[in-house]
Length: 173
Length: 322
Length: 117
Image: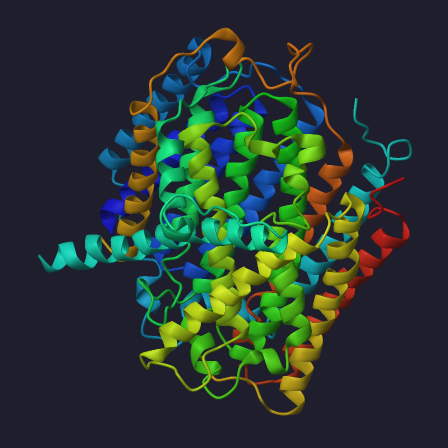
């Protein structure tokens, strides 16, 4: 499991470097998908299967929206990919920076290992993350209500922003 | 040795029959379409045309694949691989009646990965750098994600009755009686949504031949096209097996030798329904398609979630934990 | 470390890659300009294929995201209904669904769901 965790964290760092280095939103959002996949693997190794899958579902949807948005509003014939010189240069720069951070952290000893969820294993028959999510329906129901309220607000705001061709604030070119 | 058997032979024993089934599903489709239009369908290669899918496969893989000059090369080649591997991977938690990997959240896993397969379509359409492909891909995206909402809500209604996201739980919950008898409206919505999710007729606006030629895969030829094709038909079989597991559970034949048979036969029947629908119904208009999911299925499914929950509370019938 | 799911992922990806490689190694490749130009009903393409696109698709995508989030909020229900107080989760669920159902109604009445104008 430690090995998978290392791989996932590595993919996260490398992918985030690529997200920052890409000037074109197409590849940026696609790389973000890879990064969110790796983040889900990290969550699964921590023990949060349900959280990981839900995050995967929601993040994929979110990135899909970004992708659709860029194809809807931006027309870029030849977007920059990682193979272009500039992008590669930036990416190497970020990777070098993160390598320095890594070496610094391991020398100082900040990274201690990950046994966050493992202590909870004997608690009950539920998995810990699911139990936490279920509590959203009783003790911390206010969180659920705030979430629902925010979704409603977003719905109305988005509708006002882009309804029809002539009435909304955002328009296709 | 044991490792090789469990970790290499078993997955291959799952994957190879699926690919074979896909091959013969294409033959079945052409035969059924043929007989419904009063013609024979493929009947030259082999007895009754039984070897036709193999000949098709060989032909597809020895033709020349085309890489359009304007396409972005990495994504153009990566998306067929992504489509097929996701389609095959989703079979891992399917109980037939024993699954390759028993996942606690099997249904969520399948939902997450089926939303991932939208990316293959989107990437393919966008990377081809052709207008038809892009328009097809954007239509596919809007259609698939719209129907995914209703799929998720219908699933939630069933999961409330069953008490868990593990697909094994669905089999146990339906040991005495199939869920279809009291959730048939949900089942109908689910079935129609699966047709739309797999972009089949009457919802195949993605590849409306009269306007978009072939949709998102217009630039693909030979091998890469074959990968998309395999992925599409694998998804059809997968969706039908999931429908069978969710709604047409094996009544009383759980864990006997007959349960695999019953699952396979019901899946075949549903797949044949897909083909029958393709032969019968004309194509929807795009606004009708969107109307169907957003203005009919979504409110209905929301209502069914609440009603299911209410009935469960009133009758003290909340299912046990899985 | 090596569980069945990771081997399944590896095997499916490897199989797809192998099929892709076969399809590139087996046939004779003889590309020419006409064959490799984008498909355009016999014409040479006049302008870029990456046109700015209808905003309506974007609206549908955002709607999908919102309702997907709502479903994600509702997903813990099979565990929530096992909680000691039986009616509290039900009230919360009812509230959430009414909230989002109201949002959907508003969207519907305002014409955000009408595709053809």
